[in-house]
Length: 153
Image 1 (cartoon, rainbow, N blue to C red):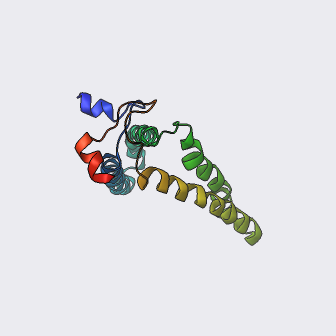
Image 2 (cartoon, rainbow, N blue to C red; image 1 turned 90 degrees about the horizontal axis):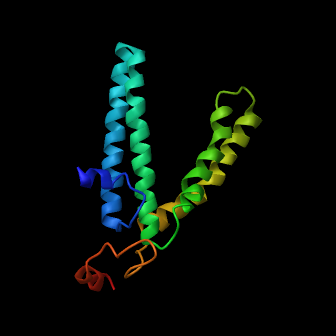
């Protein structure tokens, strides 16, 4: 149970391997929820309400995972606002104008969404590709044992 609760914590650090294992697991769960949502919508649309708490819990756990990965890089979790919040905010005009009959409004919405892409790519590289700080930092001990640290240097 404590291992499961560890995934909900914003404290500490995790290495790239644990980060990617979590991301891929969450992706699989999101895909399963998508299939369930389709089945529920076909049977009785009100049943989709059941998936809302699951979605919120997965989003919370994903943010905690990203925060711990940023801590391993020596950065504050506030960087998630730049890597995830800003692209989400910039995609809103595109979502709002998606069904507009005005081609210009849809083009502006798509342009805003594209403006968020570099921040998403930066976040992907920062959290998913770059090595964490070696040794302890202000967020905790190095998540890699000393033998594994030597292998990556």
